[in-house]
Length: 334
Image (cartoon, rainbow, N blue to C red; front, side, top):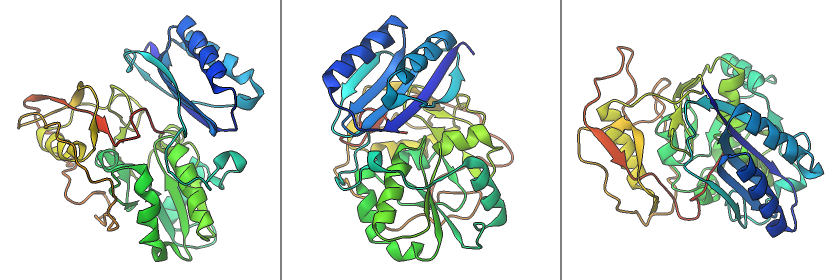
C-alpha cells in the first residue's frame, strides 16, 4: 500500500508554540503530508499520512529538535491518505483531562510492553501472581468496535469523565495490577498517572497502546477492530483498514455515535445500515457511566452485536454517518 500513516506523541515541555507551529506547518506542507498535529505546553500529538519517503523525512527532521530526539511512531498502511487536509494547531492540552496536577512531561507512569501484556493475559495474572485488570480509557463509540476481553469499560462520553468514573469505582482496583490502555498511548499515560496519584500501587500504561499491541503481538485477547480518528474509521488486527460492518452491527454503532455531543462533517464510513442514517442530534450528557460492562469473554460489550463464528452478514443499505467527537475532543486521540 502506497500511503504510510503514523501516530506519535510525546509529553515534553514546549514553549514558543506559534513559532514551532509555523515550522511544523512549513515542513509538512513541503512534504505534502496530510493529517493533524497538535502542539501544547505539555507536548506534541500527531497523526500524519504520506509517502514512505515523506514520512521518513519528516520524522528525521522532527528528531533534530532535542525535545523530540528518539521519538518513535506507530505505523499502518492504506491505499490512499485517510485525511483530507493538513492542520497544525495549538491547544491547551494535547489530550484534555482537565486535571492540572497530572503532568506527564514531569515523569511517566511505568510502561508495560506489549509482549509482557500478552504473556500476562495468557497467565491470567502478573509475574507476582496478582490479579490483572485491564482498564479501557477510550470513549464508548470506540469501545463499541473492539476491546480486550474482560476489560473495564466505563462507556465514557469524553475522556474528561474518566476521573469521576474512577472515583466511583476505586475499590475495584485495590491490591490488583492495573494496565490502562487506549489507541496509541496518550490517554492511558495520563490515566495511569491519575491512578497512581490516587494511591494505587501497581499501575501500568500499555506502551504504544492498542496499535502497538497489535503490531508487536498476535493480538491474543483482543476482539474486534480498533477505532482510529481518520477516514478509515477502524483498523483490524493486521492494522489494515477494516471491512464494512454488517447492518446489525452498524445500527448498534450508530447509536453510540449519536451519544456524542458535537457532530463533525459527515464522511462515508465502513458500514451499512438497514435503517436511515443516524440523526445528528447531539446528547448533552457529558458524563460517564460508573457501571462498567461485564460482558463475557469473546463478547466484550453487552448490548452490542459482535461478529459471529459463522462469518459476516450480507451488507445492505450503505450509510453516511455523522462522525463526531465530544465537545473539546474534535481533533484526535491516541
